[in-house]
Image (cartoon, rainbow, N blue to C red; front, top):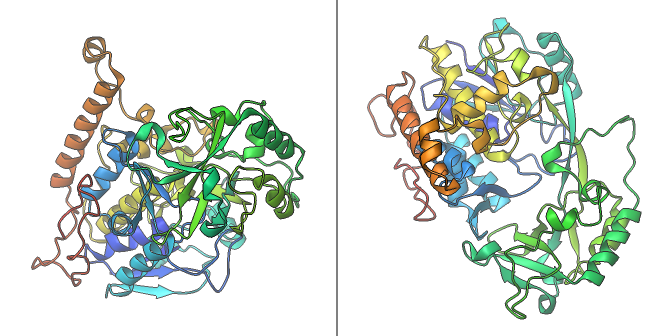
Amino acid sequence: MSAIKIIGAGLAGCEAAWQCARRGCEVSLYEMRPVRMTPAHQTGDFAELVCSNSLKSESENTAPWLLKQEMRRARSLLLNCADQTAVPAGHALSVDRELFSRRVLEALSAEPLVRVAREEVSEIRENDGITIVASGPLTSDALSGEIARLSGSSHLYFYDSISPIVDAESIDRSKVYMAARYDKGSADYINCPFNKEEYDRFYDALIAAQSADEHDWEKLNYFEACLPIEEIARRGRDTLRFGPMKPVGLRDPRTGKTPYAVVQLRSENVRADSYNLVGFQNHLKFGEQAHVLRLIPGLENAKFLRYGQIHRNTYLNAPTLLNETLQMKQHPNVFFAGQICGVEGYTESIAAGLLAGMHAAARAQGSALEPPPRESAMGSLVHYICHAEAKNFQPANITFDLLPPLDEDTRRRIRDKRERHRLQCQQALQAFEDWWKSASMRFVPVGSETATSKPLLQDFAPSSSSREAPKW
């Protein structure tokens, strides 16, 4: 049996490699960085997070929580690493980027069935065996051309932006306060409050700021869920106050009042020596960013460690090309995982890598490929990307809208949305666990007689009592 070839050591590729190896399959993991860099990455590290450092909500019975609970039950390496490198972020699971990446690299480097190759891949040959393409939204031009050849159709593109990061020591603490929205979770966010006059001054400067050059991009087709702040602002003077600068639930404890608008800062690492501006991705020139962002109360003398940037995100028209095992319909030896397959978000990308790794290992060993049940979060995410309307397909985050609705009688009987969501999560987790127990390619338990690779994570433990991490 030839080694499974995985292209890309980002979130999805690393998770896929781990899942394949833990099922006894040899893996060749290809990563072009640092030999060839991308417009957004800064290092050659595995699983480098480039936009945010958050894996979204850990609040019980939310859609992101549900997806992560399923991934923990499926022995996700990257989610386990995230739990171990978490930084304070209220009800969200946010990580120390460097420690997270290092933990992933250490685990895969110690895995004897994973061989790492630092080189760019520009060809995909089915006769080479099974391949998982997890090259991410910044797939190189050469590999993009090869994928276009295989798919027989053009790619779809959207453009995404990266949030700025500020040095913690340069924040004026006398003008900010610590709080989490609605006091949900610990007060781990720095909040920069605006009055109306300050907001109007900031808004006018933002609207007048000059965007970075568009180069040869004829049209910047932004993903609606991740718009640059200047694009949001152009839709109306108050749009930011109902979006990334929403003050609701962030009462200032010093005044007892809710500000006119708020910018939230979230810690980048365990040391809390840098913070990113939550939801403040933008496409402004660096000099313009420095001017506009220093109009935020508390950031008048801010030192920016990274400015916002724009980059192209590439993804497949998955409904026309992929089936629910993430294989190409016309090329069953080729799997896709991560953002390139049509999911949006870090957690969703890891989940896609987990499933692609499971399915690739099953195909390599001649076992049945069993997609997760439609009732589960993973199954609903895959169902969306494979059955959405192809003409207007856009990547999706996990939401309750993707899950099957409760039956009509239950909906009539239960009007409370939170209770409905609790029931949906309960049903999803039960369906997922039933599938997991019956799946022919379950994760090989560490320390069992059938395990072919040595234990790596048996010392891992949940970083919070609210997180149900598996026992390794």
